[in-house]
Length: 302
Image 1 (cartoon, rainbow, N blue to C red):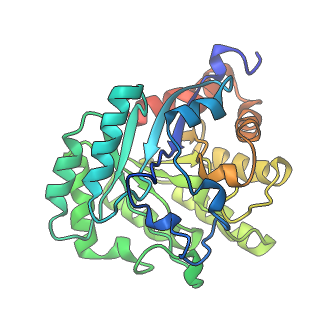
Image 2: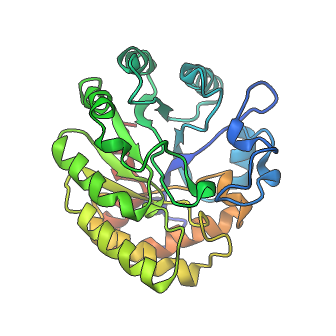
């Protein structure tokens, strides 16, 4: 088998479109302090299906999942409406993960509105908490333990929505408790757990935490965001981390993604796909198809 074979076809479970020419994306504001990703100026531009198709040409992507990208965050439905119209025009994305503040008093109404769009499959609310404010996204380290937030989370399954989980390893035990409290809610850990600190001590803690989180059968993992927190990443240093995540969750609960355009800050599309191929190289044909494509098709129902 070679990467040209059908068994190497990829569902990109984590990509973003953006149109700065007609909407606000506060996370891309040039006056914002430099974030985890570093200098964002190279991606402070429109990134549309034509750009994605150009970047991914010949790399085996067959379907995509768009994860909320902070468009007009005070009106979360705007991004869903915009993406739904884009999908009708362009045939992509195949699925949408929308944004909602699950602690908001009126979140049920917003979730019902999101679920009314045929391509919406899940919700992401970034939960990253770090002592360094530059690396912090959530208003509190333990938001997922809040009773009000959990009331919003509890509404996901009834509406057929999954949850994209983005946090750092010190929060993973809270996430494990959340997953066990809501065993019917499908959760996927993004960016293989946001390994922002890659010292030997931090990596040992991440390995232990991600292995514990993988004990919850309703949690899967995405292998994507390879440069987040490590802009100088290389396949040689990153591949062992991806193999650990794959071993922890197994080939039936592992998916892949490109995190474009964000990860284009750090490397080329071919290098991103190359490390995805490297992860899958030693799997059986059935396991490879599951990791690269069929797990995502099942999880996001595409």
